[in-house]
Image (cartoon, rainbow over all chains, first blue to last red; front, side):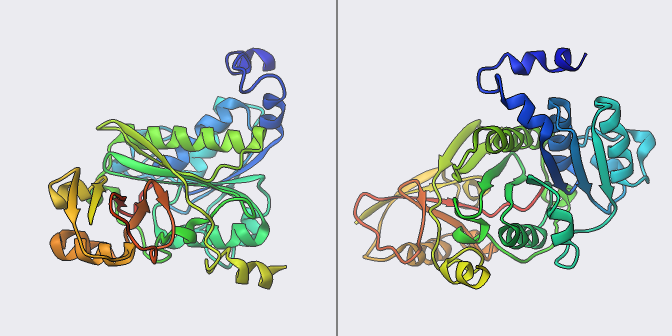
Length: 247
Length: 79
């Protein structure tokens, strides 16, 4: 049964033969269980990740249901992490889900992120990403940045000591979420960006991927561009001064 | 000197263009962004824009050269 579940992906040369073992032995932390976070969690659990921590303090709203496929109409008003945990276990009974009903901040981040081999960004605001970026660098944890709006979005692997980080190229470090119902987003863009983010995570986990290029994808045009982002030695998070202060 | 400017995502609506070639004086990447914000006030809606020079993100103090390509992206926060 276990092998049968994953036969189709094990048949892919990029996964075969050791990749599946690595996927199943990995621990993943997903911050935010909205559009991207819930989609990323679903992909990774269906692929065989056995240990996942999901973090969110929101409740399910009707406006979530067009793109957040873990949630149904009957779930409106319930906590996202509770419903997501139940759904993820239904998808793959061997997964252990640690559901944390909290908003990530600098006070709780270190404890939450420390348990992951990789951290997935399912957040919807600059401030939360700054918490992940700063804390993940301090803990030397790899994380995958993903953001989406309208018909387009970004994905980037951030690997401490190897790649540039989110602050290296001027990504804002302050700012709360603008509701998706205000700024707008189409579900297919959310799914596309989530798929790219999940694939990037798998590459980091099983192939020791060290590429930190920024991936830009527009699902409407459609177009995809990949642009290198060199490390910025003056970066306030991962620059030379920061490295010296940490070590 | 002539610079190819490529606009991405919502900046295509802000400028009404996917790309254009502009004739500009000597300036660096940061100064070019200021130039563009004056030319297209809607670009000023973001405090920060992400700029790649010749398909590579880097320092905004780099001087532009004739024939360079500058790509301008909005920051995206949603998820």
